[in-house]
Length: 169
Image (cartoon, rainbow, N blue to C red):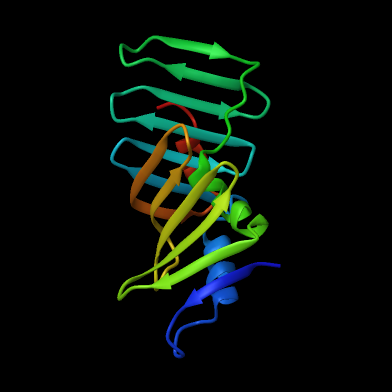
């Protein structure tokens, strides 16, 4: 059950509906999730495969039975069969919201802003009002702040062509 502090007009969807739609949009088991930010691109297929490409040309790809393969900016490839990649917080935010005790929900003219605490930090997720796609994610903890603007987010169908996007190119 998700409890929410709500600041929404009467015509807006109920808080529980917004939270469910956000969690469903970012669910890591609905095809291949893709996100592009200023610093990277990431493709995620549940916990079975993912690929991350940094703006500096580095890449990492993970497959459950093969481990992680890394390509440095200079093109050097190394294999790490024992290394498991975990999707970053953006791709796990649906589960975080489901576990959250109190979620604050605000509405602007074009987005919803969700705020909640997860020890030891304070989390904020900005989502598009129409698509529920993430626009920005902020994690403030006592040690540091992670602030990522999502330039593109989409769910790709789980097809052979899209599965090739999970491997180093």
